[in-house]
Image (cartoon, rainbow over all chains, first blue to last red):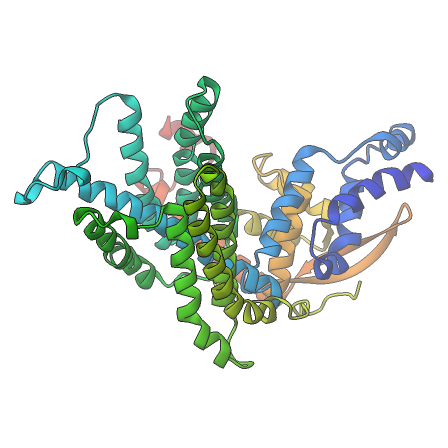
Length: 350
Length: 118
C-alpha cells in the first residue's frame, strides 16, 4: 500500500505545477491515467513499479506544457490567467517590435551608407561599414530576421515565428560564449542580460501563443513597426546627426524612458477605468517596466567607475518606477480576480 | 460547436470515444491503435485536449468506476461532439477523395489502388 503512495505521490507532486482550479477538476483523473499507464497485469511488476518508478521526463514535459498553456491562458480560462496570458502575449509582441525596429534601423542605415535610392552620403558617425567576414553577415541577417519574425507573429503564424525566433537567438549566444571564453568582454553582465531578457526569455514567453490564444489585432501591430521607427529612431538619428549625443541615453536608459512614457500615456485610462475594462494593458506595461528596470540595474555594473553615468541611470530608474507605480494598481486588480473554473456541461463533480 | 479547426489530437480523441465511453488511459490506447501508433498522446496533452473538448461541449463525463482502489472517470461524446466529429470526418473524406482523384485512383480500393499508385 505504501508502494502505491510512492508513485502516486510523485505524480501528485508533478501535478502541483497546474493551477488550483484545474487540479480540482482533473487531478484524480490524471493520476489514475498515469498509474494505469504503468499497469502490466503482472502483480509483482505492478507492485515494483508503484514502489520504485518515477514519472518519466516526457510525462513531466507534457504537464509543464499544459501548465504553461493554462497559466498563460486563452479564451476559455479564468479571468486571472487570461489576463496574464494576454499581458505576456502583448509584452512579447512589444519586445519583438523593439527587435524589429532595430532591424529596420540596420536596414535603413545600410541603405543610406550605400547611397541606395539616390540618398546623399550620411554623416560619418551614422555610416555603417561592412568589414566583411561571417559575424557581420550573421549580425545583419539576424537583425533583418527579427523583422520577419515580428511580422510572422503578428500575422498569427505562431509556430513558424517560434521556430525562427529560436534560431535567431543562437548566433547571439555563440558570440557571447566566444567573447566570454576568449576574455574579450570587459563588462559581461550587460550583453548577457540583453541575451537572457530580450532573447531567451522572449522565446520562452512565446509559449503564450498557443492554440487557445485569441486572435491578434494584426493591423495595429503591423503599423506599430513603421510608427515605432519614425517615433523612436528618427529622433535618435537626428540627435546623432547633429552631434547632440549628450542628450541621448544608452540603450537600457532608452528602454526605461520608453516604458515610462508608455506607462504615463496609459495612466489616465488606468485610473479612469472602473469594473468595465480588463486592465491587461496595465499588466503588460508593468511587465515591460520590470524587464526594462532589470536590464537597467544589471547594466549599471558597466558604469562603476563613472559616478555621473550612475546618477543618470539611477534617475532613469526612478522615473521608470514612478511611472510604473501609476499603472501597477490597475495591473494588480486585473490579475488578482479570483479564478472561477469554466462551466462544463454534464461533468461529474470532482 | 468548435469555433476553430479541429486539431489532429482532438479528432483522434473524439474518434476514440465514438465507439463508446472510455476512461483517460483507455483513450490513449485507443488513439494509438486508431492512428496505427503514429499518435502517442501524453497524459498532459490528453487532459489539455479533454479540457478543451469539455469546454466546447463536445464531450461529457459518463460515469465513474472503481478500479484497483482508484476511481476511473469515463467520457462520452455529446450530441454536438458527434456532429462535430461527423463534419470533420467528412472534411477528411473529401480530402482523401480529392487525393485519390488526383492520383487517378478513383474507383479502386485496397491493394488494387496501392498497385496502381506504385
